[in-house]
Amino acid sequence: MRARGSSCRRPEHKSTDLSLEQRFIDSVSSGGTDLGRAKFQRTPASQSPAFSLLNRDLSRGSSNPLLLRHLNQTLAAGRSEMITIPYLTALTTYFSYGLLFVFGQLRDFFRKIIDWWSHSSLQGYAPICLGLEDFYIRRLYLRIQDCFNRPISSPPDSWFDVVERVSKDNNKTLQRTKNVSRCLNLGSYNYLGFAAADEYCTPRVIESLKRFSPSTCSTRVDGGTTTLHTKLEQCVARFVGKPASVVFGMGYVTNSAILPVLIGKGGLIISDSLNHNSIVNGARGSGATVRVFQHNTPSHLEKVLREQIADGQPRTHRPWKKIFVLVEGIYSMEGELCKLPEIVAVCKKYKAYVYLDEAHSIGRQPFCPSPLCELLGVDTADVDVMMGTFTKSFGSCGGYIAGSEELIQYLKYACPAHLYATSISPPAAQQIISSIEVILGEDGSSRGARKIARIRENSNFFRSELQKMGFEVLGDNDSPVMPVMLYNPSKIPAFSRECLKRNVAVVTVAFPATPLLLARARICISAAHTREDLVKALEVISSVGDLVGSRVAKFSHMAFRG
Image (cartoon, rainbow, N blue to C red; front, side, top):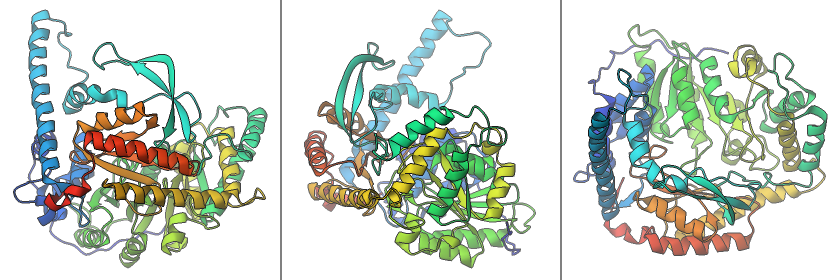
């Protein structure tokens, strides 16, 4: 791989040193926003002290992911395309979190007194679970944990069976029952409907299971490479339009294990502020200097690149050994398409490599290499490293890296996930191969093209109907990911539970996966959904939205941007 960078220098910037805990408390008390001054609207995130602190903590490899995630997400809310939040909603959200925080601290205070009186704790040992993460789990998450980790007992098709659970200790623990509810599935990443039995894929997967067994029980470099793995890598490279590819058994590991191999000390990583946690952990584990640019804002990316190239490496000011810009094709929590043409143009200008994560965008465009590149008119040759997963559009597991033959050969020699991890299951590999053949029409039918057309039609229909109802929906057209804003923490369990009562299963997302203020329900649409399914889902969401008061668009006349 060729090194890129510049030797221009600039004085090193310094920032004040605040504890992460103090910054978290400050951010909770203010929600990352000053209501009186509309801070998100008037102050660019890149100029705020928190932005400097975030960049510094990422480059140092801070060990507190909860706090870094909140800083990261809070700053992203200050981008130019801001979310409109009603004043009343913002105030009640702050007030609700404030109450939870205060009463949680009071309960912890009395708990310490009781523990001291009873001497129940181990003497001389530091608590294993300590800090704000533990506080958040005990005092906030456990109250609504029945809305998360719901077990299912059927394939994640358009409808699936959700196992009912009960709690006898105020939600501290949940016990499964023998009862199941048949629910409409709006939470799984089954974009093209391959997760259930398929007339073309399933027989071939069963045959591969009989021939190769469920696992290779070995790493790729020992006895874990079958003819299916070789065929899969060739198939993926051809599908995305790259010379070569390498596959892994887990999508998360694909990012977190590859980035430390691609770049290390002396390198510079510039990451979108809303990148997935796997990218964040991979970047932090690489040892490279990490900087963050405002979400999907090419102009700020260019500013960061220019400043960092001028500064050079910390302390020595030597030229960077190489520079990587990390972005996603579709951002899973926002449903937004990456501004790839502009970002590629900036990277070309400053000789930086482009690393594109297509976990949520791959496989949704017929007869083309990369869906996002084709959609946005970007040559795949301009994307240096293409990453993706097989869980969203292919009904399987694992991930891949595609690029030049030189790059892939290097990764096979150096990547721990390839050298030491068990190879992807042969039936899972066959599922991916068969689904790609269906998408490309190599099964002798047009089912793949029809699936692609249906997911786009379903997504745009559902998004437009939600917006007509008055819900605030993030993301772009053609995206199957639709975040419906809830904001207030009390609406998170209410929305989820009421939908489940009406046999519609949705995923709700809150801090630390999103900024403190921007809790949401994330709806994922599938090509397997019929129009009747979508109409039922809209009816349920409409009634639940009225019940919990989540239709916020009608209050836009009294809103500020956050």
